[in-house]
Image (cartoon, rainbow, N blue to C red; front, side):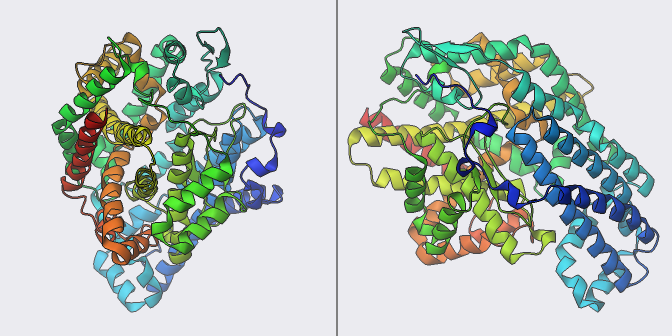
Length: 600
């Protein structure tokens, strides 16, 4: 076992850290930018009551609004990423809090913009777009705003909500600090008595250990910690959901789910179709669980046995450079220039912050501003899963890199719905490359098992999360509150339904909901599952359709937010308005279960 302890950040060499200093070589410029944004937002009030005076006035106000947003985004992203480097660093905690506070003030100062635009004569605004060519690039933005007309409040009401924005983020902020700084999972000891501190970063590695005592100790250490804070975390999540529900009602949506999906024009049926399709294929998941129990030779399969590989080929650890080389070979179907930019970004340009350190935010993400590199936060420990994480987050970063070179700031970001496609196409290309190049039957079994576990984690598990999240919001929308007892019972029942009769029930798994930080972003997790489904369809097309399919996908990478997500994916080559892509992905899972059953 690895007995190393986390290092302090200042003990880690710069070559292992992201080059975030590139954003603000002189941090005093950060203060200047934040002050400039606050002053510009205050001055923005001069447009109040005059947005629709003329095409020129409307264009000037719109460009001023976007200029403030662009500069503030850059400052906020820097502060947030610095804070994520070490949540206990007082300086960057203070900077992050200042940025959050400034964001609330800027939102409040500019909050009249949308209500006033929507109170204007829509036909007049449409005339301005036709009359002034400089407004034409903003057509999709304006269409999106007018689509929300029924849900935008008066200028005064929008101002009140903007003022409250910082306070409404309290449950999420409190949970983040509790989860990343205050929680202690203890030490995991193996059958020889050797110990390793349990952390967010090494938890899955410990759960994959060949030593069942290690798996059990890690599982128990983590979920006992969450059990002890069960009531506190329940209160935080209850108020987070209440915030979602109240905001949706204030804006006159039928539900919090409808509110969350409306901004990207995603039909509610996409969410419910996902749950329905996955429920159809639960027997395939139960069959996989049964095979796992049989192959591992266990009378009782426990939740701490679901990550353990069925076989363990030798030489499955990687240096970072080896991981990059493997990733580049796997991503070759996307084109030489894609691979060249990816390689340079994750090595020479230092996009990646890759070592665990004290206080560092757990998990992995790709983040950055329109004017920065597309940075990646992760903890690379040399496993194959780490290679997949690098490829996954690299997909997000490359999506950002292509978009920001082709789209103006107004369309320079991505909906989560489309972003998860870009990351998961990369993962799918990697697993296909590995399967095609497997040299032994043992390696093929390992990789099929690995692929099945990716389905389990991304399609089945995230859909289970989505079902849990919908049930929680339904309770609050029905006038109830989320108690620890209800949350634990609902999650435990869903876990039993998804894993099936061959999974032995375990009291501690009912607390797993409380370690999922994504629940503090309402109706976010389902997009991992839809993205995974779309990605499998697109990867199949890239393999079988050649240059035409690749070029359609590459076109999609450049489009950012310039169209609605469903329409963007149609350009890429997949129609997510139907359940067919989800069912197609689940049929791949079913076929892999057949292959595994035959091989073992």
